[in-house]
Length: 168
Ligand SMILES: Cc1cc2nc3c(=O)[nH]c(=O)nc-3n(C[C@H](O)[C@H](O)[C@H](O)COP(=O)(O)O)c2cc1C
Image (cartoon, rainbow, N blue to C red; front, side, top):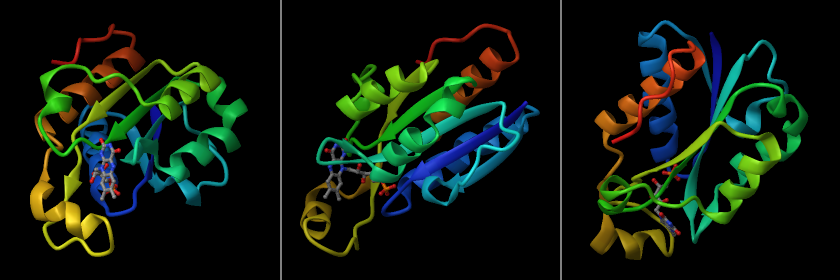
């Protein structure tokens, strides 16, 4: 399967997550392209799309939101999964977090097959306010590669028609 993974990422954490998802899909045999969401003009030959965006003040990154709006019709015609990356604690791993409103709206817009929230990352030397202030108490990496890999495997399984495996 040819899969396009796009990311809306301000500080690189969600980009890294998109690359982890892509690496797993590739390892499982998919043909994967990873792009910043705002750089994509057309979906071209993508048979499935994963849209990942960082969370800021409860909002899904604007590049992810715009990507969904801009490509709504093309996306509605292929399997789509939405990914949010944010919590700077273990909450994303402790149980499935409900999607933020933007992600819920995007789900409806393109009839997405699924959505997931993964932990985020904030580097200790983050610059700019309020990130630098937050970094004093919340810096860390909560992206959990194992869970990301397991989730990507469910996407691959679904695409390959093997049925989804629940994310732990
Ligand atoms: C100013 C600021 C606001 C944030 N707001 C949220 C939030 O509302 N919800 C959340 O889960 N994470 C929030 N985070 C954590 C980010 O989503 C996390 O750092 C994520 O990995 C950022 O993605 P990026 O590195 O791709 O930009 C916030 C981080 C910063 C710096």
